[in-house]
Image 1 (tube, rainbow, N blue to C red):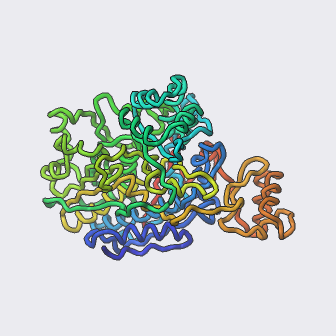
Image 2: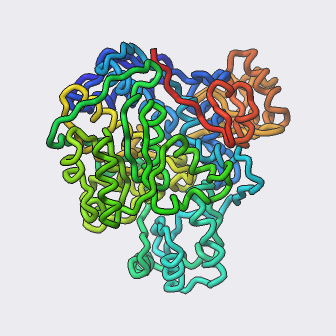
Image 3: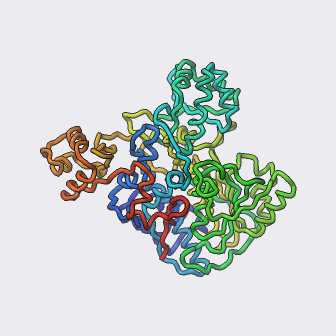
Length: 566
């Protein structure tokens, strides 16, 4: 363990604490030095954002998190601040790598607003693509389920066959089984899952042990939902183990892109793995993406941005693609040839697959001494003999993050915004950067292990679920929603809105519903109370000139790089 480089707290204290915790947990030969980090709230976004709630409101997190309920909802953890803290740690590590390679970087800046935009990038891409196909979702009906004996739980399968077998074994109506598959599998994309009520009724009529046995028989996974936010087993966000052999890293030539000249080979799918490669590319690395013959099937899933899925492009734009089948001898030889000229190999394969293919860390380190080999998994290092499939919502359910996502007076449930997929990819990239810093100093490579579960532990949260008042939630106005500064007293709001100073939260909520959002924000601003309009449609961000310096525009809208190096 070592002391990290300074992180200037400014106003975003949770983000600063996260960054400091991540940097201080690294081994001594990965210590980031002489690069300071600044984290503020708004960054290049031209809106005064005083706290986490304001960022969630303005940058789309409340909209995405609230889709399942049909209204904007505050996420019960400081998620945008956590992402900003990880981005700051990444920036410090990348800047330290650049210094070791001969580029004199001294500081990096990022913001909680930029972190929030990065967290919703897939949803933003889908909402702003040039496709005529319109993505739709419906509120209500979402998991988790409740069994007859009172167990609340999530289920997961990525395949329609298992879904059919499971529900048939439980005696569900065939029409409901068929109707439920589409919203269930699309919940990763839409952040909603309006399942037929018949499916919930089926679960409510059976004990959990019956349901669990049917899941095992059908090859799907059922997992009880923890009702307490605390992480059940504390683990490091990522672990680094030295690999045999020594290698060199090419000198840097660019001030703005600290990883220029670094080559990354990735074999990843869905969200977590591609996010890691996406972050490394934004920092200047060349990323070579291995896809199966014919390309990744996710490329064809609407909405489309040009000739490719908008969501896929959001995480994979700018990567060079090589198609090969590593299940064949020639395909595996091709992987070895790519890695022999690379600095990093990243994958998020299922447990045991790398060993089966002869592409584990020890195998590839022999052909590329000094290699950084990163595995982004679902559950490592939890010592389960028979782990369930490692997907976002199961990890939220078991890690306690789902219990923290909603306040105490609402049922606990995983957010249907993919919290750990994004954070898991970011944590993986952070581990890669730490390994590269070790390599430029010592010549040694490392195996980097991280997971969705380990990333969930990065999110600060109390041992008990949050308790909110009405003013802690998004408040309806005459034409939308706004949020008030966190923890503000009703007396600070009532007077500016024309109420008596002793006005109650209910009276404030009523007054806000009677007038437009802009009117209330203006009245409160005159009393130095910063209220924030809630984004209720992601397309609006693209049309708002206050986001021009934070968003890029092509065939969809995307967040620009969230770091500025000095």
